[in-house]
Image (cartoon, rainbow, N blue to C red; front, side):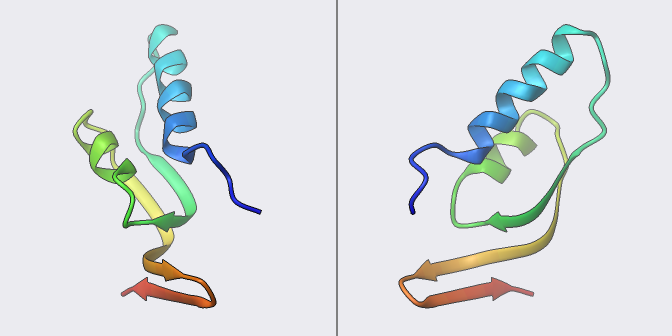
Length: 68
């Protein structure tokens, strides 16, 4: 099953709500990051650090390449 939405868009919406409550965001933690998508850079441009336990650099059918 493919997801048509981007998880980073959901994170950005949550961050917007958090900022509306005048809270401070220390960073965003994710289990698995698809680094080939622009989400990390979009969040970093907002001053948000992104922490990932695993980062995928390339993904094709039946193949996943992780970033060290």
